[in-house]
Length: 332
Image 1 (cartoon, one colour):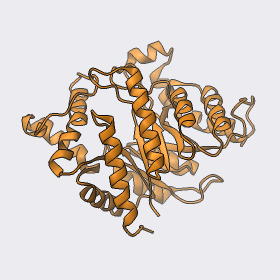
Image 2: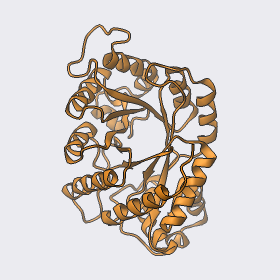
Image 3: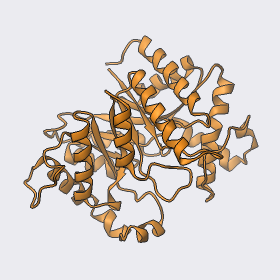
């Protein structure tokens, strides 16, 4: 049966505060748990006014205390920004606090430009080159296989579910080689989706943690009473994406009616392209789009992104779409 989860960037709205953003993330995590979602992931970003999830492990600790059963995790931790030992300690701590509930998704991108790397005292080129080795080292620190030269406490022997994240063939290849479950960022980078999933499944080598290929795909989800209202809700994220791609990132803006009609052709085409992994419409329409995407990808899991300016409307969209998906016959 296909599992459904939620990805949150802890967005900061125009006119809103960090406190508002964290309160909204907490409420969304509880809504996801109530809707029977499997996981709630937070993504690491830095030096961005509109995203508050930079201290990812700290945010996850708060969300773990605010929920009871849903898995919490990173979607992902950008490992080149850290040392494997630090991440083993952080997620080992989370695993001890919330047994059986912690995921650690790993990504290779730094999450910001060279200024961030200087602030972190990192050589971004070397850090990216070391990524495969760092993943292996981190896994050893958590599992003890092979036995590391030094044990992380907390960390060593921790029950942490390790994932590889990606939007290219590189991550798919590494996930296959290491026998890790694989999550593809199709909600904003769909270009290599089909090729990456085919490569991952073809080259997958079973591991103690993952006996067969296991795929998660990301989708944007916006649902409302009408298709027009859902498109209206989606316009906040669409604006944010256009601003990011044109070098003008900021806080999440309020929605605009008929936003796509205001765009020049090039920007409109860009949004159409990234919208390949989007479900926008009534809950029934959105559920059909989700099912069609599962049929295309053969995904074992789907994780829903898609911030709305009014956080309550995202919770409502999630609950209503999940209810429709639960009523439909499960995919095997």
